Length: 213
Image (cartoon, rainbow, N blue to C red; front, side, top):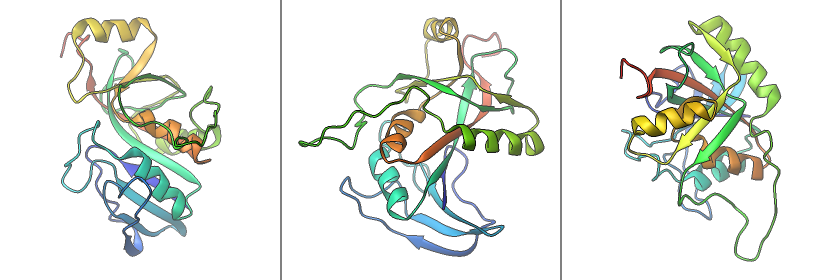
C-alpha cells in the first residue's frame, strides 16, 4: 500500500474510490487526522493530511511519530510526502517540483525516534530518501509538473517562522536547494519503521535571499 502525506494545500485526494476513514490510535497518540484509505487506478492508498483538517497544526505540533506508526499499522510500505517549500536556487523557480535526495536537519525539540524507554537501535540515514520511489516521483513529475528537478538538499527548519535573510544566505552556502519545515523527523521515523520514503517538494516561492521576497 502507498501512503500519501499531504502538506500545505493538499488536504484530501478526491479521486480516491471505495473510500473509508480509519482512526488509528498509536502508542504516541492519534495521527494528525483520520487516514483515508481507498483505491486509485487499482492501487491501494492511505492518505493523511499532515497538518490536520483545516490546517490546525503548525510544523512543530505535527505528531510525526503517530503519523508514521499509523501508516505502518495499516500496511503501508511506501510513503510519498508532498510538501510546499521555498527555493534556495534561482533555477528552481516557483511552480517547479523538486525531488530532493538529501536533507539537512535544523529542527529542534521534536521527538525523532521510536527507540526509547530501554529500546536502543541505531538506524543508518546516509541516504534518507528511497531511490526507487524517488525515481517514480521524478518520472511522474516530468509528465504532470511545469518543471522538475531531480535531486537537491532539503533544508528543514523548525518554524513556524520563516528564516532571516542571513540564515537564508547561509543555507544557500550550505548547498541547500529548497527550504521547508516538515521533512524531519518524518524521514527519520519512516526509516526506523522500515518504510520507503520520498518527498515531492512543490516550490511556492523563493526564500528571502531573493530580491523578489
